[in-house]
Amino acid sequence: MKSENNFLLKRFIMMLTGILFIGVCVGAFRLSAFGVDAFTCMNLGISGFLHMTFGTWQLIMNGGILVIVFFTVRQCIGAGTIVNMVGVGYMADFICWLFQEVLKVEMILPLRIAALFIGCMFAGLGVSFYMVAEMGIAPYDSVAVIIEKVTKGRIPFQYARVLSDVTVVIVGVVFCILAGGNLWMIIGIGTICNALFNGPLIQFFKVHVAEPIMKKRNEN
Image (cartoon, rainbow, N blue to C red; front, side, top):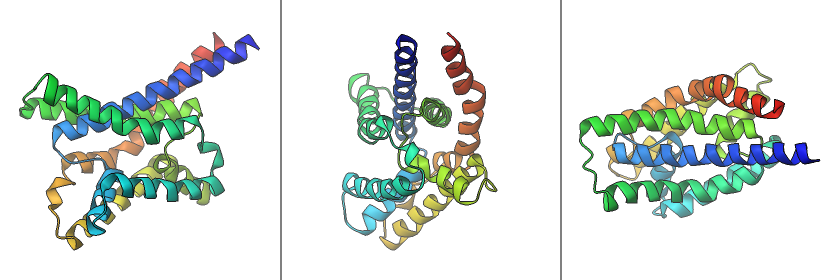
């Protein structure tokens, strides 16, 4: 029983660490000013078209995806799902507030490039951590899992993630244009890097970092 409790605690810590990394990722992308991540890109485009606040629309979108997840890959829902939905935005806000308002860091080009790199790396690392913890993942992160399941593995997770990321970026761009918004406020090199490389990075970090850490902890 003690061993099981310790393992559960380790999974919980890994889940929280992964979500912390995702918060760092989103904050870093915002500080870089090189474009937002794929899912945020779509939600900004649609919310602008509907004249709805970003937070309200993202909550509606997450709720809709969560219903689909419930009926397809229910195992993806857990404590991590709720923590992710609630905590990532606040963590990103805190990081931006710390750098912009407290430390008053001037984001010159080298720092923006560094923030872009950190955002890309921590995006893959964070998702891989809380996926391996198996305590629930964010609704959108479950979409690639659904695609892999529906195609019976013919589209592996890493390619399914690229497919979903590219799709939501296109949707965001279309709605932003229809709304007459500033397209460059939501899309940039950071968006493209996130859409194309996040899936492979998640798979890489899952196999080479997250799973070995979990296996080692389980053996201990």
